[in-house]
Image (tube, rainbow, N blue to C red; front, side, top):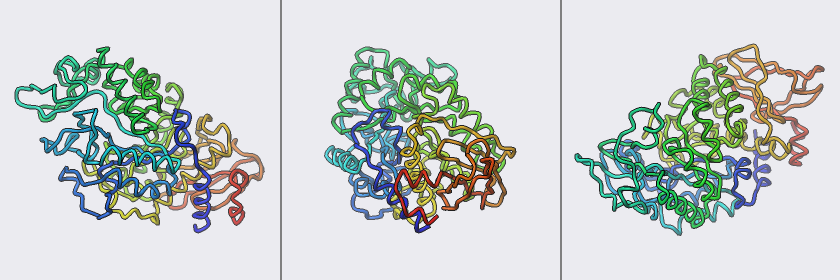
Amino acid sequence: MARLGVFLAVVFSLYHFTARAANADAWRRRSIYQLLTDRFALANDSGAPCDTSERKYCGGSYKGIENHIGYIKGMGFDAIWISPIVENIAGNTGYGYAYHGYYDHSYWAQDMNNLNTNFGSANDLKSLAQALHDNGMYLMIDVVIPANNTVANSTMTFDYGSFSPLNKQSDYHPQCWITDYSNQTNVEQCWLGDTTVALVDVNTEDPVVQSTLNTWIKDLVSEYEVDGIRIDTVKHVRKDFWPAFASSAGVFTIGEVFTDNVTYAAPYTEVVDAILDYPTWTALTEGFQSGSGKLSALKAVVTEAQSLYAHGEFLTGSFLENHDQLRFQARTTDAGLVRNAMTWSFIHDGIPILYSGQEQGYTGGSEPANREAIWLSGYGTDKALVKHITALNAVRKVAINSTHNYLSTPMKFVDQPNENVLAISKPPLLTLLTNAGSQGTASWNVSGVYKESQTLVDVLTCSTVMTRSDGSVSAVAQGGMPMVRSFKDVILSSWQLRIIHRY
């Protein structure tokens, strides 16, 4: 494994891009490390305790993130996604601090023209952006359009003048709660939240509101040198609002559309650059959380998305965990299942997204338990999952740079006789996944992909294998672990990593 470490270090030292060409095409090369600003790093590295159940700010900041860019970059990530930056409801609500009691992700916006100073100053945020760009990395921020937020009262009356910049009652839809998710008008024009904290729904049908929001996002991106925006709750705003908003941002836009239905999600890929791929995530988690998971369902969802999404699965955000869902290791801690599931996002057609703490083996359940402080891990880099992620980022970069059409070639499933395996071809990579688990057995036989006597390297173990005279290749899982194979000569010629000859 020592020589693998040298290989990865060379790869990441060579892989550096100009950080300001932040359109969708530039983002497709990236891999994203998602973090909660309040939970990633303290400015003074004091190691302060953070009890998620208390639903309080724990002290993470922009300065803390800046101080630990090296940790993120060292794993091969070249973009970060941080929490919403705008001013939130102050003080303790019936659900704790800020958003749904989950203060740490800062979704309870109140003043969109000011910053949430719990995370630091405007200069601190600008310094973070500059530091990221100096390291060839992108900055993505989270934004929330559907609602401003306020603590509710028994009469459901609100001080609209406390909001900014939309400070008139006419800037919002009349009060009604979302009660029917099969009724899209109800979803788009009624309110999230409840009688404890109401998310007052913005009237995006109003041309003045549209203009105000478009100007706001344009100014925000410019002021803080933002490279991309993740948009929350996209399905709660009518679709024809989004193209002008995305155009005003002038950078890559990726939206959250929470659904397991590809047909429902697909139209949103027409109005923003990309979406977080929740339909695939649903099949992914269900498929790999136990040996009884149906990997055929994952294959079916991907095939459908490749057909229906505007750009296929390209540009979609591919993830296993995020701040809204219980961590995968709350579902299973089986080492084989965990590594197979984690591998998926990095060999997928889309943009890999890793939620901070996943690499440290965090096991938090439903929110707020899944919003742990990363500083409590010590940012250890010698842990198995950190090494696993680092290797996956490295081989993805090698593939991108060795094959001119890697990012436009759709992944294909190579049929297998066994239900507990997947073989995925995305040249020059061949990925072999299984949900057999660490105590199970799994095998693959792949034909129709390679030629005779080609040497393949599994980048996760450094083992090699040669294809047979008919070009086929077989494999047997060791401890239920995944394999990601690539041509030995491709790795050598693309990166001039002569150290690999020792394989």
